[in-house]
Amino acid sequence: MELCQKSAQYGADQELEACCELMDRDFMAGPSELRSARRPKPPSLKEQALEQLDGIAAVFRMTHG
Figure 1 (cartoon, one colour):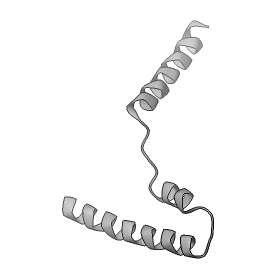
Figure 2 (cartoon, helix red, strand yellow):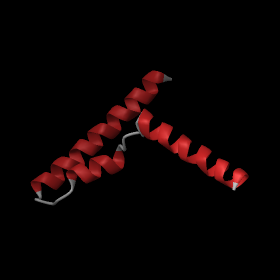
Figure 3 (tube, one colour):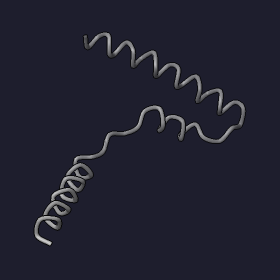
Figure 4 (cartoon, helix red, strand yellow):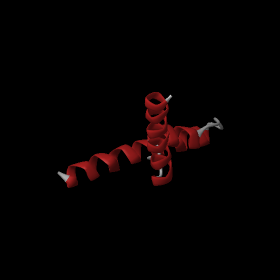
């Protein structure tokens, strides 16, 4: 299963690079934006922790006024 996932990701990465090269060649702005949209970074552990704390704080405010 992991081999299938890596193969699919490799193909998608090749497609993404081709799109970015085309955008660079045609002087269009946005290859980095395209790359970010196609392969967004997952939230960092810090961002995940802060989201959890926000949720806990919201529940606390609702239950304790």
